[in-house]
Image (cartoon, rainbow, N blue to C red; front, side, top):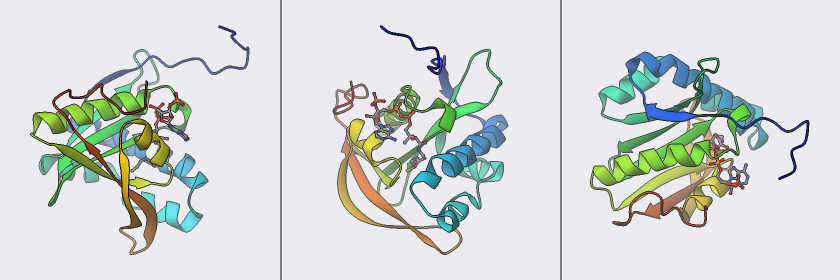
Length: 183
Ligand SMILES: CC(C)(COP(=O)(O)OP(=O)(O)OC[C@H]1O[C@@H](n2cnc3c(N)ncnc32)[C@H](O)[C@@H]1OP(=O)(O)O)[C@@H](O)C(=O)NCCC(=O)NCCS
């Protein structure tokens, strides 16, 4: 392997279930992800609306409604959340979402986070999992075994809409680890 001097060092990370004490740190990671990565795919007013209601209380309320969150942290690092995933049982389907800080992307953290959410869905009896994927994440979800089932708009708190891709992954008894084309 050739190591270049300007290469970013690989992050050490571990994943654990998030609790109420983590909600503010999750919100900070969510905002970083939206404002840095999301901004590469959407115009500023959409990015602004996307992050407008992101705060710790949002996750505390979601946890109270039985949504589960998993977060990646860097042992010995600055203590910030590198990224997070979630699983919830929606009105019509099991749903997930994954967000990673810009400084932590393309190191397998998002995929590891997704696998924990996928395992939670399987444990809850899901046979499929859905996501309204942002344009910034379509290739990521595809790499993790999702297929596009449609395109449309995701309604933001602000009333604005953001373009998204509706994606679905069938879950089998083989469980997590069987992640489509990814590794
Ligand atoms: C999408 C996101 C979660 C991916 O996180 P990540 O930690 O970089 O993902 P991984 O390192 O596990 O990537 C796994 C594979 O997905 C694909 N992938 C991930 N990001 C990609 C990108 N920007 N472009 C193309 N392919 C990508 C690649 O195949 C990658 O494997 P490789 O790095 O070996 O090529 C992250 O980019 C993000 O937070 N985006 C902004 C927020 C967002 O839109 N989240 C989804 C909300 S629905």
